[in-house]
Image (cartoon, rainbow, N blue to C red):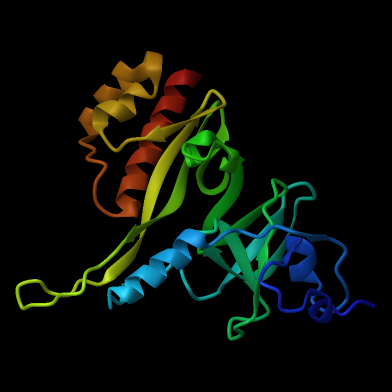
Length: 250
């Protein structure tokens, strides 16, 4: 019997097979894969903020606490409960032995697994829209709002913005904290192609090509603004996608 904790050790670079690790803390590990995300920019940001005597507000996690989650094997149609959190900057999931433990491991990216945290399902996709400046890094996790079927799906991508603060030297120039802010970008997958959603009525309607006039009229009739909370925006986008599906099915 293999002692998983002893086998894995404490290396931050160790990344493990999601289902195997979460199901089998004590009885063994069949697969170990090496994926080590770089944190150069993040480390540089923290160091620069420190030289500016600027505190950092926010962090690189969707939620810095580990939450009860689920790892789903898409191939085997099985799942395992796990203590998870999502690292937005590294675009990876981290697994803890328990919610009180400070020890965690990063799980390797795999098309064969999906993750559920706080009722959001994350799936791995490949699209240059996720990282247009680095096309080789085109794989990433997105939230499945509406699964892709009938040639359309709706998705959300969490991203990070870094903003350096300033150290005030006078009463006029006050100290401003550095910030790490979470942002969201929405995507349509339509006819097997991902398209980024700009939250503008006309730009959203134009994504639907030959049905754009119908969609534009629907948006106007429903008085959608595509503003407000994530929930408000997503509910309006969901209704637009469902309207389009009904158009195509009739």
